[in-house]
Image (tube, rainbow, N blue to C red):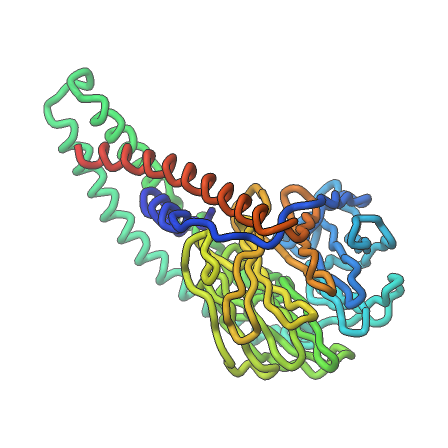
Length: 443
């Protein structure tokens, strides 16, 4: 669980609500870990599956670490191809900072990042590489870029003013609460609960008073903002393709959402088909299925279904418990999506949960759960050609987790009960923490 926007008791209560539902039966279990080791100083960042069932791993330092460099130990982006048992088949380097990987219907491998896109054949031979045309157009109009930067700075200054006023009011409230709590009492006369509450209020006051609005709320230099706009627009979080189109997900040129651009297979004739998509923690995944697109709209707890021009066909999913079969738990899920060759939609969540839907949005149940660490993140998912194996990208562990079918109904129920027991234990621990904080607040 993560998201800075959810804090304190509200975040805890939200999490409790999301784990409260009992776990249904599962269809798959964890059967194999494929450890992905970079030879150029990187770690696993994303995965894709080719039409013949091979796994493609993208290795570099971090998609969000900046498009101009990967750190002191990072040397080059790598692509590694594995069979479904984890045996390495091919490895090569990419001469730009690739940030997303996908597979074309012809077996080719697509790599996008830092404003560029490339296609490799199955053996790693470079077929085509280009600057994304809409990025090149943006770079070519410096005056327009500067105007966007100036507008963003003006908006930011107004936002800072409003935030300053809100912080000043909150500081006043904290001081009043502290004064009321202390009264004429010596510290030794305060109860244990009062001391805890006082310490918490004083810490919150210290944090609020330490905010430097000029430094902590972004740059106000036009050149710096121009550079940020370029980096955001050039950072690619997803790439997918059908027989005639390539779809690229990147940051919006204005604001903080994501846009989906469509090009032909020569990476020409760009058209923006979706805009202002909300993605938590810099994550947005889009997958093509024929002439249609499926989008993991994580801030809305749903999957968006669109045609190739961006027209809405359907949406499905809802905010629900972590173990429900028809919705999504956590603060922002699903994070990733993929389509099987059988035409089913598989979704992945930051907490390691995989669900399955029909393309018209009907829930087909909970697939399984893997054990992960960390909060919001890319959890790219892939499905074998027969849909008997599910491949799950574990960024913190730099591994691909493989899920295979459960042996029988008894195992499916046992795994479901185990997940349910863990959820209830988790809920009990969180509820105890909430009750303790509520008791402090009521004193």
